[in-house]
Each structure stands twice: as structure tokens, then as C-alpha cells.
Length: 612
Image (cartoon, rainbow, N blue to C red; front, side):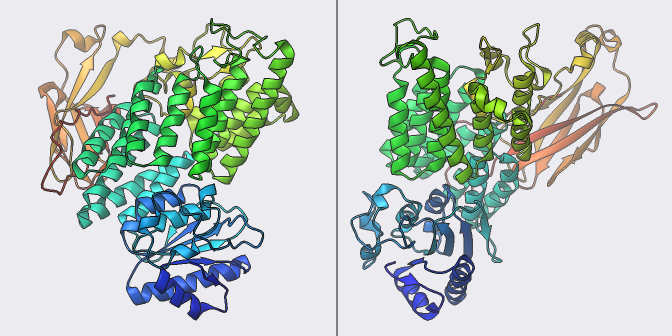
């Protein structure tokens, strides 16, 4: 690790890497350095029979490595890391070893730990993550930004690499891309018999469901993940699951700061400083709008925590929420401007209009800092929300750019966030005369959350903080405006019910289908006609029988062949005419079966299929 490699030093680099298992490379143009890294990695990997994984620099990469690669020997190449020195290569010294990692560093390697490791550089975070591991780490150091992407080599990627890639997609705010990776990760961990890996896969499934607004699926999976973490003694995982469950409460508009405080305590008990920083942030956000809460001090503390663990994404969200609070409170920070009543008048405790203007300038500075960090971390979700809030709180900024709404909408669209686009539409349109939220928001968010939507005197929306925690899809069966003139009582609905708990691969689960007519529907007072319900699996699963008769109580057996999200389609037809009356789809998440000898003793919550 004290060796500095150049393209002419392939043989020396190979020997150094095999001896120390850690190598920092610099001092060459990008293309030369990348080719050099690839050559070293391939030689070592071919001789040792190990897989190779390539990463571009990203904030999540050190934690991804910490979570997986360090326990599965392989060769990991990370290029584009800033060394934060003039020549791109840090000076060797042992002074920068982070607390708690020195004992695990291989003999003879401590002299190569770069200075500044305690200062939170990405290079130091990577080296800390690999300290004591059996994997080979090659780092290409430079001072530039590159897109965050995790690309496995032509060798088969293992479950931990797939989990790392899925986590990066979730961090970026693009959960759509995480699903296929998680399905492959679960299969890989099951083949390997890795119960710890399976627990993390279930957790990430739950996190993905929370991001997509599927609260019940997320709650079931996160509870299951928490029990699996307990069964294998994975305390950091249990803390993350507790924190995600607490964040689910914000979707209803009622945050649970006590649960977030418990998650923070669990992280600290497990020695997970990064997890503790995130739990501290969400606890602060949950309480930021409370009268008298010292949010200025807490946001500063959280920012310091993220700096210690070199987490730019966490720092970006801290700046975002700090700026949002500054822009909305105008002096009531719970420390030096509170009047004891929690009021938010224009003349706060900082000295009337001048103080308010100063706070708004400070909020602008924080928004700009958050934007820069979100761009560096390649997080379009955070960038879009920061652009939107910055434009709403800074009229001068908005008016300088006449296409501000189109630009923000474009960023949301790039990650498939239709809910984010709907908030931009609301910001452009202003409050409706009747005070009702537009359909595109009402069909995605709970009424309790939308009830917390406020408006400034200038007609700008005060969007609930929790709105940016999810990217919810439209709820099935939610009445569209064009259907409101048709009373619900006169319609018939298809109801699907999952009759068995916790679907697992290769085990049949029963699904009941009913046609439920409204009280004003003709079928409410007469027997159902001879309807036929056809069932179709849209994934790796079987469903039988292929047809059922709702009048006789149609029941189907759903047998998935792999864990993950499965889609089923049910088509109700009039048997006499062959007319399709209604077609509905259900999405069911299948939890991986536990290959270990012991199952968690706590019962898992009963899942519910999407109902039409």
C-alpha cells in the first residue's frame, strides 16, 4: 500500500499487491492508469482464481465494499478516487488509521495508510473498509468526478456485489433498477447458503418497497429482515431495519422520532458510525418542525458525523433539510429566536426583515451546497428535490431561469419518479380553488400526508418533508376524475386475497378471487352470472387452475420458483359472450426461504396482495 504504481511497473505492482493485498496507483493519465489497473487485476485474479469487480468512485462504494467484498476474497478495482493531495498520491504514514481498525490491518501494511484518513477522504474510507480483509484492493487516485457505476467483470458476480449495486441504485433514487439485481442476489446467497447475505437482501427488498410507496410490503419485509438479522447476530443490519421501519411512519404524516432514536442507539452500540449518522439525521428531520427544537445545533452535529465517515450523500441531505428548515421558519430555531409560542412570523429573533433576509441568503447557500454534493454523488433524486425547493424559496433564482419547472421535471422523469413530476405540476399550478390535492398526488399519497400540505402567502407550496422519502405509484382502483360521476355503489369490483402467510419459493400459496358488486349494482340482488376468471403468471411462477368460477368461490394456487416480486394477471370474462369485463394485476413479494437450521421465532406479519 505504500507502493506508487506507474504503467511501466506492472511486475513490481503485481508483487506488491500479492504481498500487501492493497495497492494505490497514480501518476499516469486516466487511460494509462485504467489499463494498468486492469492488467494487474487480471494477472492476480487469473492466478488466484478469483472474480474481479470494477467500480467508479461513488460515496456508497466504500460501504458497499465493507458490506460484501471484505468477507469474500476477490479483486476489487476502484478508479477515480480523489487523493486530496497536489500530486494525487497521499504521503504514507500510520497516523491516519481510523479508530477501531488498526488491529485488523495485515502485518507490514500500517506504514502505507495515507495521511488524512481521519479527515474523511474517499481513499481513506476505502482503505479502512479493506483493512484486515482477504480481498485484493487496487485504487486509482485522481482529482476528478466520474459517474457512479458498479460494473462486474466477465466473471460471474456474487451476491454481495449484486447487493452493493442495488444499494447504489436505491441511494440514487432509482429503485426500479434495484429489483432485478436483488432477485439475482437472493439466488446467489441461497446457492452459497449465506444466511447473512439473504438477510441483507430481504432488507434491501423492504427498503426498495418503501421507496416505491408500497408500505405494507415494506413493513412485512423489514420485519422479516429484522428477525433474520437477529437470528444471525447481525446487529448493524438490525439497526438499519429498525430505522427503515421508523421511516415508514412518516408516510402517514406522523413521524416516529422515538423509534429513530432507538435505531441510532443500536447503530452506536454496533460501532456503525455511518448508520448512526443517518439515524441521527432522520431523527432531526422528524423533530425539525417542533416548536423550540434546537435544529440548528442538531443539523450541525449531523453534518460533522457525516464528514467523519466521508459520506457526501448524507451531507447533501443534511444541507437540504437544514436549508428547508431555515427557509420555512424565519427565526424560530428553538435556540435564539423562539418566542415561546412556536410562531413563524416574518420578524424572527434575528432582527426583523434584515434577519429574515440573512436567513434566506444562508438557506440559498445551503441549497447550493446540497446541489453540488448531489451532483458529485450522482443522486438525481436529491438533486431534483433540491432544485425544486431552491426554486420555490428563492424567487430570484426561479425567475432567472424561465424553464425551471421543465428542467426539474426532466430530472424526475429520468428516474421514473412520476410523483416528483406531480409536485412540480402543483408548484406551477398553485392551490386549487376547492383546496383538494390533484388526482396525480391523491392517488399516490395517504390523505393524512396530503393534509399536511401548506401554502405560503405568495402561493408557494410547503411540500411535506415525507413526500421526498418515496416515489409512490398510483394505487390500484383509485377513482379517476372522469369516473366520479359514476357512483361507486353501482360498480362491481374484483377482490384478491392472499390466504397463506409468507409466500416462499416452490411452496404453493392460495389466492381467493371474488367479484363484489356494489349495493346499487344489479348483481347485488341476484346470483352472479356464469363468469370465468383466467389466471396468468407474468414471471417465474406457476398458477393453477388456469380458470376459476367466481360464483363458486374461485381459488388459485400460486407457486413461485424464485424470491422477489411476482406479477399475476386475472381476467374476468362473461362466459356466454366471451366479453372481457375486467382485468386486474396483483404484485406479490416472495420472501427467500431460510436454508439454515433455525428460523426466527417471532411470527412474520401477514402479507396482503394488492387488491383491485
